[in-house]
Length: 128
Image (tube, rainbow, N blue to C red; front, side, top):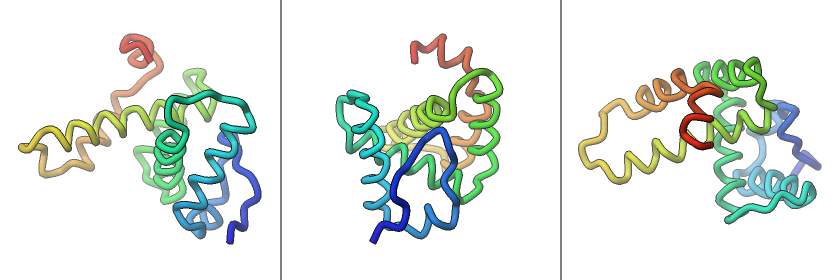
């Protein structure tokens, strides 16, 4: 049963409450927000799943993810847009891992390195 009634990407959910939900419940909350906000997406379920993974990483207090989100917000992004930016790095990283059979043995550190390099300027330059 979902204890959180709504999700707002501009406000960090309580970590214990967020992580206490089933993953499917988190995705439903994120998808419901985007639907209520009338944000059109190519694939709302995949979008909500990636959003949820980033929120999970924040709730788990992964330092590099949190620092990246805070840095992007300080550079002018909304919390929601910063989550999208982190999610875009995550998706690119996962794509690379799936395609590259010789992927780095330390995939997590590779992901964190990409996040550390992420800025609003790099987002603009890559067309995001």
